[in-house]
Image (cartoon, rainbow, N blue to C red):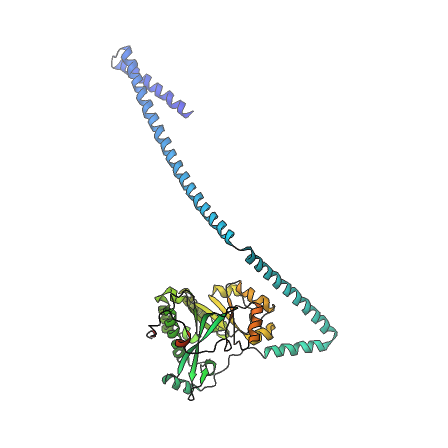
Length: 409
């Protein structure tokens, strides 16, 4: 309709030109008609050119939109193809194992609830059962791993520190069933006057004397970083577990030093796992957890030792950078109810689902090894597996030409 009106106005314009040239400029009739025709032709050409430019502009915009749409579709197709490939590669048996483990845990919970209800009903009939249950719970609590106070006086520890009698030996952590070394624990030990080695629990203060604790822990840090650096290109991906405490985390200069060492190499940092006791982990406040998270942010991991319970929010632990948690072999096998409400065969699978390793330490007999293997535990450690010894003698290093420690600032 608009285009039709434009053509009418163009016709009126050409007629007006003809009248003006005929009456005003005294053109002949033929000349006036030609002038009007030329005016109409020029107006028509200009109008059509304008329409063509608009059409070309709309066409170009349409092509750009189509190109963007095709690009988006291509990206979506690529992502869909990638997802299909990932789904195709997933093993159905693995997924079924996860479902089976979930059903097993669910069945265990139902069974235990039923047993608890039965016990309550029996207790209401016979008060002796209540007394027996209370006695049983008391016996379980006796086995809880308590953080003992050191027996060695602080003065003797400081003296041993000055004399260089505080050292770090390593103890291998192996996998089952192959029993191949997959990690090393750096353990602080003190040489007594008779050359007997004293465990860290007997001389490292648990309260106060933070400067002394930091000094002892830094020896382990230096050794662990040194061996991790020399093994960073090893294909075995061996981990090095080194103890850390609130004393080191809360010291600004020590924390900056640790972050600086981890910054040297990302591959080296991925070989380091800081071990903190469950008691200290629970006591960490928000700011202290952020400090530990800063070490995780550099590529390191965190392992919780001395666990009194495995009733944790493992999804939350994974977000905090926890890569493993440790339980005592004797208690885990003989009194599993202390650690969890699940059956032992379900606990390992349940924890592993969150990407957290369950390490059973203090293994002392072959029967314990067989029991853990049957349960499905993958990582174990203890004197029966391999006693602690000199790092130089135990740790396999790719390039043994460089055994020097890093400088401590």
